[in-house]
Image 1 (spheres, helix red, strand yellow):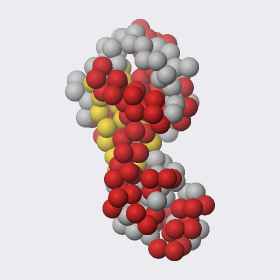
Image 2 (cartoon, rainbow, N blue to C red; image 1 turned 135 degrees about the horizontal axis):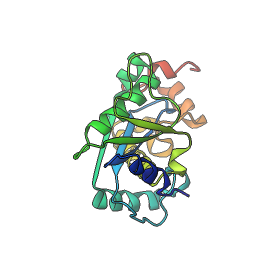
Image 3 (cartoon, rainbow, N blue to C red; image 1 turned 90 degrees about the vertical axis):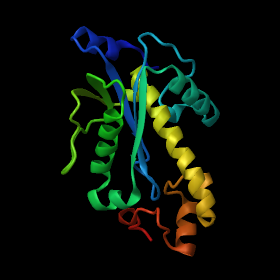
Image 4 (cartoon, rainbow, N blue to C red; image 1 turned 135 degrees about the vertical axis):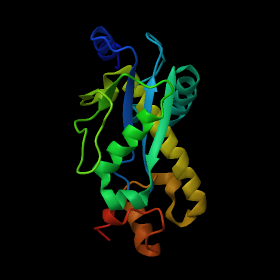
Length: 201
């Protein structure tokens, strides 16, 4: 379960304001990639908080409201599918995370970032930071960011399901499921499909 250990370690090194940052939607064939950055009040306890993949959809919605209401600062950003095709998914993930951190008011002095990559061929993380593999199950702030990114992306895909009902985005959220591939073969791609991800069609 996530704890405050990594945030407190950063504070002990002299950083005043520490955020967690995570992204959602690197793997889907369609839609934006989202990222969130969150600064939480020290010691805040949120029941059920964990890596977003370990939390039910209903609890993620509750946590989203609790985090946005109680965070010192939080920010959500994204990169559109067209740009993902132009700069690739690694650069897009990193760009979205830096945009989320840039959107924090007040800004963070230091970031705990989920994953093991902080730069691609075009984009880099500029905020002073530490990369944490499986950070969303270790750090409270990263877990909170993972919830905001995941819920924001799911809500966006629900809107896209109304615009493009023939793909059933409400069911698979754009991920490469068997059903999604079937519907892609029937209908061809729509404007929010990532063309560079459609190698198997």
